[in-house]
Image (cartoon, rainbow, N blue to C red; front, top):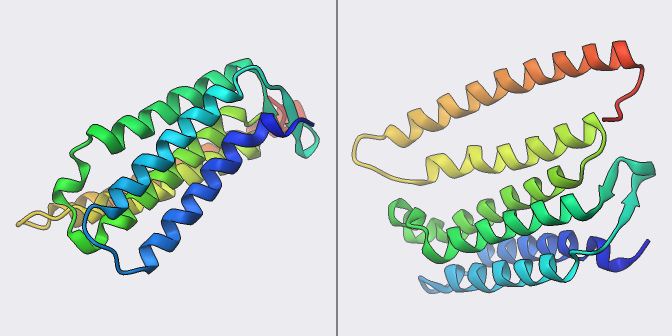
Length: 182
């Protein structure tokens, strides 16, 4: 199992951890954006570095191959572009700016796990990790009519319904195929 195959996930996990510690500290406005920009650029570099890598974890439930590495590169580029050029911070209060970038990073981490998931449960857990971060991200934006709170509640309710339907469908697949392998 080469370390290069899982370098992107490791760097992205450590980046999320660094962004978490940044939320605990009192920082100047713009510090979180600069840190997220640097860490997302590092994620793009590690995704490029590991393009040819292959590997397997958890008895084949998590597989790294050329397709998953390409998808991870696209996700990392999307994260970098969202931090660099996104106007998402415009509606977020200054004291919640580090949390905004943290949850954006955690959602990116979930999407990278989703790219390498090779079992139904791995795919479900990665999808939920990405979704839960976005559930928190939606109400962070502020407007004068409190539409962000309503949107966040609707998003959580629709997400819960979608998760229930997904688990129900996966139980049928498991019942018919007698395996959770894709």
